[in-house]
Length: 338
Image (cartoon, rainbow, N blue to C red; front, side, top):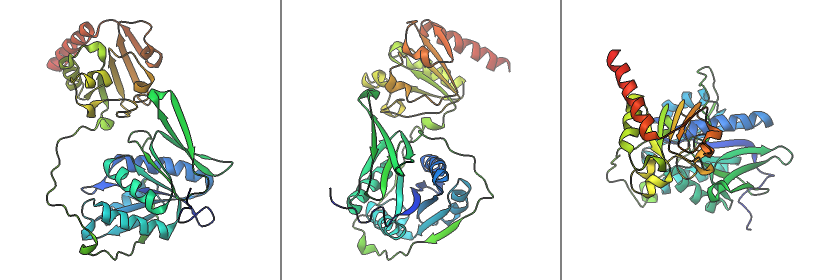
């Protein structure tokens, strides 16, 4: 494999995170990555840095410090007002070659994946995509990226021994966010920006943001599986009464009952709700990884030997089409009387 533009001898002992932001709000995955990076860096005595790119984003610097970064490398410029791979790629490449971090992490979002792939080529380094865990091999001081496949049947542990930076994209919801500490402070480093309009060959003519679903923010989640038999009306109704959201497993998506963005699991969304009610779900591993961090799991299934019961706090052996309507009626009566 070709040598990277810098190696272990030139690296700085630091972990960098792309602080992805939209409308002057950080993406949750960036804050999740700060927390995990802080944990790893504290083990090694390393620094954690955030790369903040945008237009008028200086106001986000105190928030970045509060979540745990030691440094903020900032590029603030009108040409960075919205994500553009040419502009963001050039700025990020320049920053990385200046700071030479050992590790560079992005969220596995559309923009994060786009940027990480381009950077890996320019930096001549590797990229571990859609990781579900990160930790440091203390003996070799090399980052270990966990990537699962084949429905959880294979878990790959990937290391980059010599190439730098060690790059990875991480799926949203995998790690927890820390509680912000408003008393934290750090160092701000401004990135020189020789950006000119003629360097960018694409431009945003209009930006239209459609309605979307973010299941990672749901505190109450009602999830319907194959056993619901496509009757997601009761799943949605229960979710509304609980002031939560509804989700699904792969079979109802494949059958066209629910849109794919509501799919929970290894190839869907990883969630951390306070309560997850799993309705008619067998409990295959590729689904379970999506709710492993739920505080309380309630499972309803007609099969007493369903694997989902091994991961549930409360187990109900029965038909969801009987239990869910009864629960809806009870909750509706409570709501009306209160």
